[in-house]
Image (cartoon, rainbow, N blue to C red; front, side):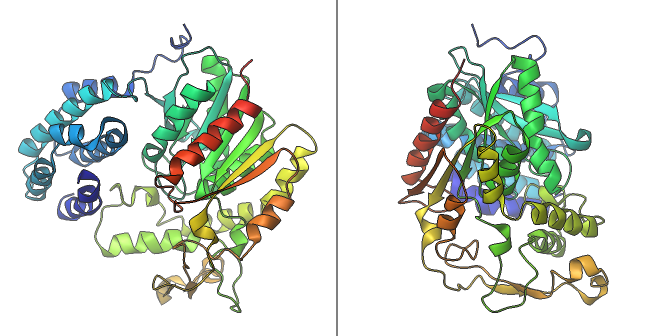
Length: 434
């Protein structure tokens, strides 16, 4: 299937070759599929943009599979054609490959215009330090003054959440915006935690200005739930609801081996490890797999220090959210995948990451490296048993914790639909349109 082929084949390619529906006057953004098709017709795929276009092709196909069906996507881009494009690209024949990519993109855009994602817009707004953040926006059919901004986890991308945002916009009657956090996917910048937090507030600024929205909810999955969206809800008084999908309960409880000396849960070593592995594999830093690590080579000390400073301040985010709830309306929903509540046990994924000796002169980074980075049954975090209950007890009302059965941290079906329903219900209750 295309989804399976994509996971493996894109790496091979990169290694081998380098009404209310009307927008406000300031926001005449094209619908996504019109935008892509117009760009392809204006500037056909070439050696210079082949990597970017291939990434777009793969992501558009992945987005359309759940809404249009695998069979229809395969009619436009069957696995053998996909594999042929990869093979031609690997041989450096960008002219022939470009022709195939463009034809497939135009075909998929036609399919997209007939799908539930037909009205999705791609928008761009400036965040911290002028960094451009990219998002997909759904506009409700019924008039609304409310918005919901959602962020992917870790170093993911907005495409994985279009089904959630479509449902929220349609059923809760709000503007729904899924963003690539700065330094990830299409957004500019690099891993800067304060920037990720500010992405939400700047998105609110955009929605206020362009559409006159007045009420807002924020949310995120995993590392996009805590800390960025949770911290944004703490700091930005315009936010009246936070919806956290399986977020770490406390970053300082992550990556700690019982009984081991460990300074805390600064996730920067994982960033550095991935960055160094990408260099070892000779993957271009601009490639989709490592695009989130662009520009970090010369900023590693800065990244470690900035993440540590931000996470130390927000170390007990649940307690901070609870205090905010006593000062202003803030409804907190935490959706947890049953998979991560299983008893902790070490897995084969556990390993120790040692930074090369020539790079251990930095005291900032040195305190976090040359130590185990363990993974457990969930494949993600060492979450002490019952920690979510303490996290919940630190909150005040309104609050709700929902444990979703039959799903994993990535919220695959069938549990994913239940999580989406909970999100829609929470927004309808606490972010009512005026």
